[in-house]
Length: 181
Image (cartoon, rainbow, N blue to C red; front, top):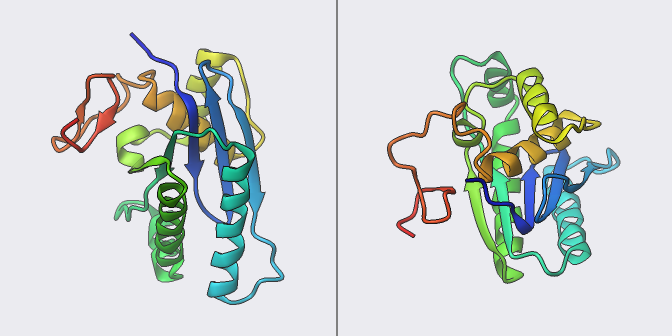
């Protein structure tokens, strides 16, 4: 049986960070913040995005859990190969670490969830169709769509679409986890 997320943020990190805030139903509050292009250096960009994430945490001060999509290199993915060559995966890794740290230091429980765990090989088109069947909603960007997808996956709605790697198991609440709780 599915269990709704409550007081939970799900994050698709990047220059266009999509987020969704869950409150015991299938209809999250959602949004996106985008990197302001006036910031030219990597350090300026990371600081700006981390500050935007801090603002998001302040907007939802009762947040208990934060799930952040992790960074992975997929050899078979042309997008992943291009991102690696441009050093975008490094920047994204730094950003995920900063988001994780800000959530933890704000007293929230945080987890980094690899896309292969929550999404498997689903394209965004398939993801969009599945989410629409589950909650009847469409979302304005792929980043928000992925943030919502992380939440719906954490509630167990994609159980038949995700092949769970051996090192992950379902905890007592039915969520995928890599720890022993």
